Length: 150
Image (cartoon, rainbow, N blue to C red; front, side, top):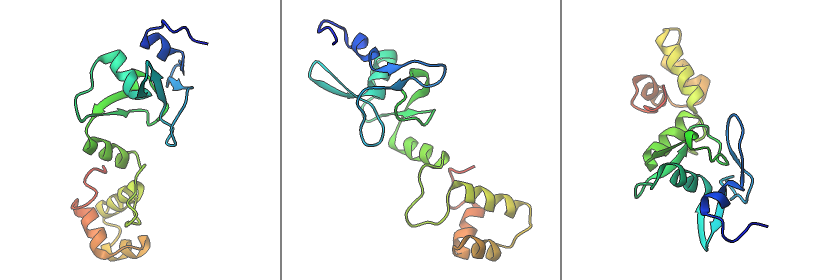
């Protein structure tokens, strides 16, 4: 049992395990794997509190994002501040988000662009192979869609 006179930082440190890589949260987690922490009747998301304890306040409207892509990680060097747009871009670049209306993901986008650059495939053949419209492939190769995927 923890002493009631512990500082928030001391209390917080009791709920994660340090390693060479991620510092994994071993306390309670939400359905998405993010740690949650309660101290002095305040509820925090563990990565946000890790940032605040290590680096200070989080700008209003900002999110705490993970470089390591591990929601239970609270290691400050694995965290960074970003906007909702930054979070969406990060999800797409790491291949964690695919629109329910598309059949293509980041790996397929890179494959299409690579093959088009090499001049080995016609757009209509790529469209047929990937099960999408010619217009969809055209937008991929011209950069009109999936701009964030390199």
